[in-house]
Image (cartoon, rainbow, N blue to C red; front, side, top):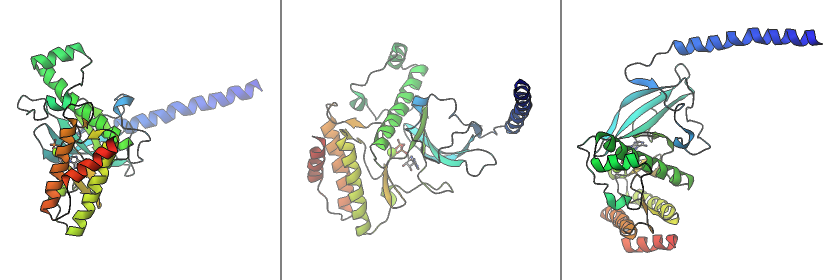
Length: 290
Ligand SMILES: Nc1ncnc2c1ncn2[C@@H]1O[C@H](COP(=O)(O)OP(=O)(O)O)[C@@H](O)[C@H]1O
Ligand SMILES: [Mg+2]
């Protein structure tokens, strides 16, 4: 009995180092190229990953590479890039992501002013002092605060069932999220670029009201809602650009910002002959709020 046990242990002892050597060899064959890095997923802490369950398309393998696939849009506070995360040689583990990278450079404009951030606190006193001094570290901290704010807002809204891109992870000043677009990397059009007929636009308006209700029912306003922060993907309106999301009650400007979102949206749709009234929409959302 003890002999048998000993020999089976010996057999498995022989097999396992051979197996692991084989995997190590295939990893060692891959070297990130100039526009590549190893996937940052394995190294980030669990709280900086998107809500579970992770969608099936999320690539979690430590053998994945991130490849830069070009720029989607440069902006005042952030640039959005197309990123491919894939395991080389495994077509089943390949995904496109939107990488929103907040700028820490001095020329970055601060149109997302303190109006939005009132009441938010900074935990780390070194960071607070750096922010006040506007040092290089301070600018890095400020940019990372926006990326974390956007990531948290996306997570919260995703969990409430709002049509936001799935937030994959946040890492410093970079948010990685679901890419809304096709498999070739062509991004979904902004609502502002869509040439729909009246019936189509009426349907999009109904979808925008639905998503505003989801925000309001949780006590939030988007805070920067416009036809540029709404994408039309596969016939559905999706909302993006959430770092300035507003707590309608806690923020002293909350109601004004909610009202402004209503006016912006209704102005746009009214110009396209869709029947809507900003005051009625505002009242509707207030009803959801209280
Ligand atoms: N998840 C995404 N999928 C596809 N395109 C995106 C995504 N996120 C952003 N974009 C593109 O990048 C643009 C800018 O993104 P946005 O979050 O609005 O940043 P900004 O702060 O520069 O307005 C969008 O209008 C859209 O064209
Ligand atoms: Mg935007």
